[in-house]
Length: 196
Ligand code: GAR
Image (cartoon, rainbow, N blue to C red; front, side, top):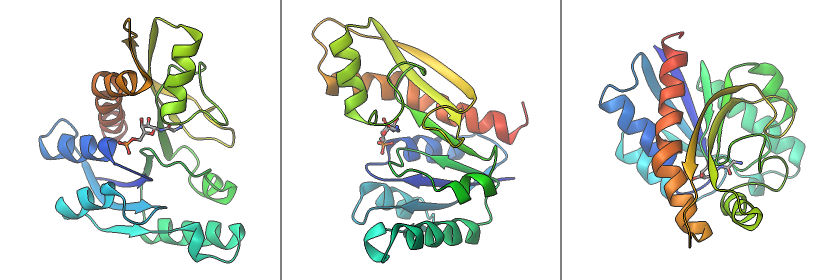
């Protein structure tokens, strides 16, 4: 069984997609051992609780410095003894010590077709605002391994999504989630869990 730790910052719809896929057998050989959030009061933690998964908060606000937070975060991650760490809308830069400790064991979902609309400053709705501003006709989502750069690690899976006339950033975000993110993130975990 692959021990998966999911890290979140907000609503947790990608977390929910993983929980559902494990429950319905689309993802096999996988146990979600915990959820870490950097924010209190996020709906992702309610989703974890409802699924009977331990959820904890590691917030920078509770530490005197960034270095202390980074250490606290790594200690908490280690305590779950994960085989795979899934960044599912985790909007904190992963500390270098953690990337070194979990080389090739951290994956991230990004709401664009990397290398478009990625890197520093491109997260959440901003990605879709940029895509609409540029006038692209196709966008999508990418699952990739996390290395020391921002959105630069090896790509595992991608899925394209059409941009439609009259799309707002919110409409496009929703379509990219439904048609791409909620599918390829569980699929990538299943692939890793089954060593495909
Ligand atoms: C998702 O769209 C995810 O791709 C994005 O944050 C959202 C989280 O939603 N991540 C990034 O932008 C990372 N650069 P969720 O909490 O409902 O899963």
